[in-house]
Image 1 (tube, helix red, strand yellow):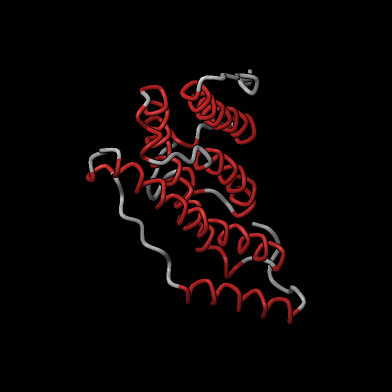
Image 2 (cartoon, rainbow, N blue to C red):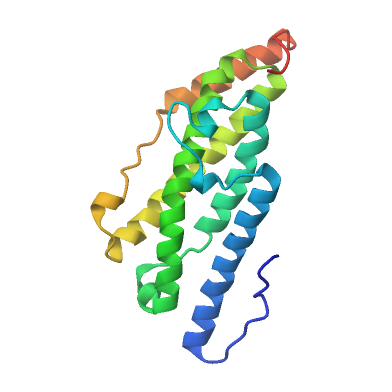
Length: 194
């Protein structure tokens, strides 16, 4: 069942502001529900680490799962509140719930990307192209998450709960692009899907 809150309207400024954030939170819950239906797991509650769900997926599963996670992550980041807007208790509570999910979701997303990168140089050309697109989007979302976490810090969330994010070196992206370019020159003679 999807949460339908698009029609909430209020002519009072505080009510209008609150309804905007409630609709954004509702969109995130809808995306989370859709992601669960598409991949049959709540990615925020999966086992992580070396034997975790995202680390043990094969290439095909990763290429199907990571875009679903990206869409869910986009809905989370689209809450897009600044510290001044988090003074209302309801908006602040929604932000805190999103903050908790953001850490779990990003951890799974990051593990999936690490697994994908580990398989990248053994992939076929079309898989490499798709993986490179996923990785480039991951870099953009990491930047947006850093902004989201700055807001969390500004509204008083304990710094010990906020992870420090580091960007991958630009040389990695260049190496991935060069590998894809070399595959395009070779006319895709690498092994089939795994």
